[in-house]
Amino acid sequence: MQDERHLSFKAHIENVPAACEFVVKAAEEAGLDERSVYHCQLAVDETCTNIIEHGFGHNTNTGQITITTGIDQGTFVITITDNSPAFNPVTYREPNPALSTQEREIGGWGIYFIKKLMDRIDYRYVDGRNVLTLYKNIEHPSQINRNEVEDTLSITKKMVSNSFVQVDLTGQIDSHTSQQVEQALEEELQQGHFRLLISFAHVTYISSSGLKVLVTAWRKARDNKGDVILAALQPRILEVFEMIGFDMMFNIYDSPEAALADMHYE
Amino acid sequence: MNDLQITTKEIKRVALLEVNGRVDSTTAGKLGEALNAAIDDGKSRLVLDLANVEYISSAGLREIVAALKRVQNLAGTGDLRLASPSDRVREVLELAGLDEIFKIYDSQLEAVGSFT
Image (cartoon, rainbow over all chains, first blue to last red; front, side, top):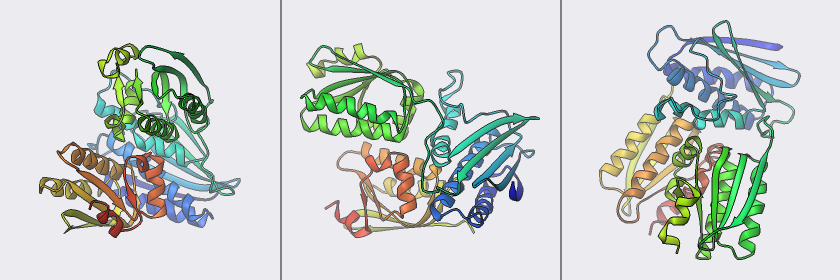
């Protein structure tokens, strides 16, 4: 690794801006464009904030965070090491029901941003330390790569009561698979099916592109006196909806059966 | 070094909050307080001018969304609208899908005018 730089600081929130500045300087000097530098800054900010607020729970004087930056084969590499309890943001996706809502917020936008903004992220737990490595390509800095996860989504549709079409989704809705969802919903709207019931029972992840597809369909359905209603959202997904206020727009039900039983749609 | 300044003005019965600086986990609380103060003061039409915000993290977004929920829950036509975000701030808003739930205007004038 070239141009390796280190910064160590106490895990206090007041130290995070200086850590961001350290990374910004290194990223600029590594030749990243302004936009990519901003992405690195945001990813480091979100990571350190999560570590301090959730990993250490604000209340420690022994918490230490170390940031190392460098350049490796055309990639700007940021490694963030801390001695808080083991937490793997890479695999973080579904909530642990044993945790309170407050604790689960750890998987909110912060981690989502980190995954979206970086080209690759990698987590290891070594010698009692969390080691998170963030990679940002220098050659193609304008590209926001998707997560390195398998794109699998299956969609089934059926007519149900009250002239609703029920759309069952299974898998992950990310920037790629959201196009499939868009197509599936658009097909129905084109055919004049403006009452759509989407079941999320088997959806484990939704990205902002997926949310946009839902809003677009919702608007079109509403314009045609129909509706797009949602059912069986897992707590993690529901949390995303609530976080960005979508729970105020969509009618959301515990199950498809509960949705269809709602007299409102007679 | 890590200052955030917020000035609240009233224009045509709209509370205009001009935000200046960096909104991150160390300063987001201040933004939340300013928004809450305007709402507690009886204002339900808010414009947040982001022209001088060079940086916002998810901590800041949470405060803005919380304020939007508060004003939308009020009786009448409460709303929180955003004015003149920089390209970077706009990108973060889009990344979080917030460009779908906030009305965003290119200038303060348009944002305030949108309420009338």
